[in-house]
Length: 500
Ligand SMILES: Cc1cc2nc3c(=O)[nH]c(=O)nc-3n(C[C@H](O)[C@H](O)[C@H](O)COP(=O)(O)OP(=O)(O)OC[C@H]3O[C@@H](n4cnc5c(N)ncnc54)[C@H](O)[C@@H]3O)c2cc1C
Image (cartoon, rainbow, N blue to C red; front, side, top):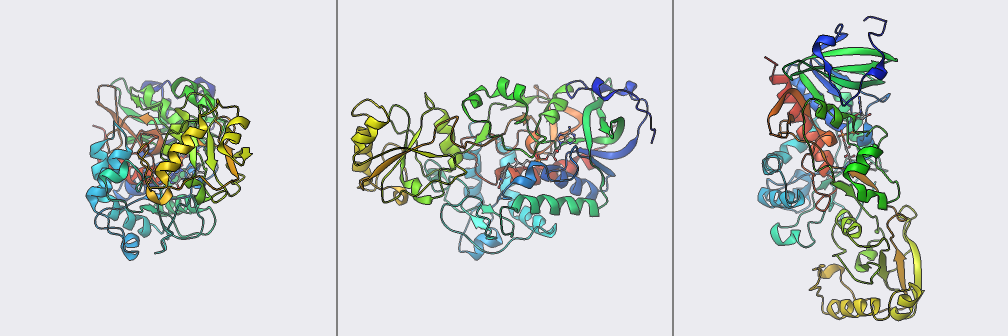
């Protein structure tokens, strides 16, 4: 390897590809180059290696994991009658129910082909995860839980039981967590996959940031420019480059441009530290289109305690706006759609428990009547009172004709003292990460705005816009499911598709 830098790393930008003819030498040569060692990159590498491709991975951080290692590790799986864990716990999950749910969750522009592949392949994918060494118990944890950290496997991790999803697909729990105690599921998953990739012969370079892609005059991507030890290096990829560099939640300029409504929230970006959009920008530099850049997973951990799901959320006009029993990600999207940043969760004495410290949900008002609360919050008379009166009347009959909350979570709020909990935008904890990214085929091949493939370029995980592409429909487990399943497919495809 040459020791003198051929160029200053400052000269490169992810938004500008390096011309092939400007590459002074190749410091690394392989068939497939993977950028980023989260779960998408590790899955791509494992499969590229299994298909016989010489594979080299470059990771900007000093170790594997990325944002994947911070995750709960939940993967959304089902269909085919059920995974072994679903079946062991008495759940039968038809592929068509799984497919329909996923399609709804994908929103109005759901990718039907991708969803079909995932629904048909999810059981085999679970087997594959186990074969890689990811441990799963057979245990089911009922109820409304988030990242329980108990070592149990199967949880309800989406809006399956809630309206409108329950109208189109038979509900089934589909969140599958690795067997580990503490909130370490993502770390275990990411490290297990990374280890498997390295055991399979992956050449890995840490502290190695991809600065730009290398592309020929004909637009083919033939490699990447890296910064390693402060030096510029060039990696040739005979078959192609797979971008698995995460999303853009840490890129303020991109967020401001694509998701300006996030400025209403406190800066609670969910990231392992490198989601700066460089992968997406590299893809765009060679003609890749970026889609659904305004879709951002956002959530509001207003439970635990689960009893708070029986409360009702109102906006600053004192009006209710959603069914509170849906996945909190969907609930948070509806909070963000309200005019005004003040959002209140109304609870009575029967269901009140102190909110978690994490949620930053504070008590805004306490009173013996809803009229008192209304006054304390400064709402016009008869607004909040009337909302609660209507809710209570319906809830006492086990109905919610306005928002279709299921009977299990309905109760009249009639046990004083009452409280309004402040879930305000900009104050409470509304963490978020990006869902938009490069447009790809399910094989990972990056597409232009005209839906033509960019030769030699692939993307997976949050660098692309995959299965999860609607914040409203997101269920926990969809991102890691997408990263691992379609990361694998990108790895296989790149390995088998040499550039002519
Ligand atoms: C607290 C938390 C909990 C979550 N829980 C879940 C869950 O339970 N289930 C679920 O489905 N999702 C969950 N998510 C979301 C999920 O973790 C991410 O969407 C997913 O891990 C993204 O994986 P990835 O492989 O695309 O990116 P990452 O895992 O972030 O990997 C990308 C890698 O690329 C590297 N990189 C970036 N730029 C460059 C560059 N230019 N050159 C070289 N390397 C680069 C980064 O350092 C990183 O290691 C959670 C997220 C958080 C933060």
